[in-house]
Length: 217
Image 1 (cartoon, rainbow, N blue to C red):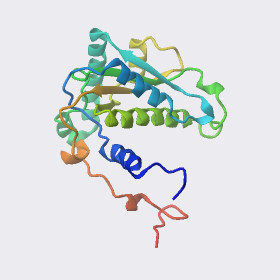
Image 2: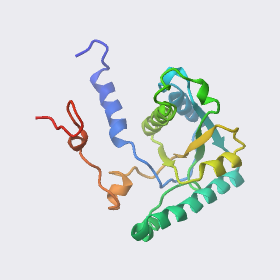
Image 3: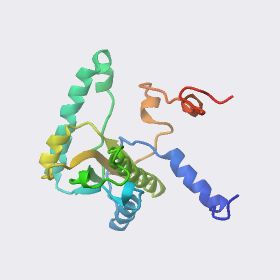
């Protein structure tokens, strides 16, 4: 084992946070203490980013009226999504897809404007700005689980409408509405799997060797 490895207890804690992280939809109100929120955001900010561009921008939503406006944007997209799903639309409408009104903290995470100026690592893969932002969100998610807080990623919204609501500059783009706060309990398994919407596939079905589709012998 590498001399740089964590202790067995520390490794177990890291893997536990990964295994027990859930996309939460049910929150129990309460609050997130300022020092805890600061730790979570710092964890997010420590994420890797291509070319060290740090494309993430966090907007903390503290005005109740603005929170309600965001919820209405999500509801509009929920209806459009149900229509696009066709035969599964009614089933989708029975799912709880967000906890915007119930969570203690609401954050919007967006890509910054002016990203085209960052070429390092993005000349052939410009979407690496999105990949970097996703790393920040995952850091936040895992840290929240370690703090005993739930987090849910809401992507049901029209980006331009949300950008206008938040007075974002041209070229920036919101990609996540994050619900954060205390929960009564964490789901034993992903909520969509528990409700029969979809079942996760095993790693072996997604792991190839040397070429696409080639499984290990």
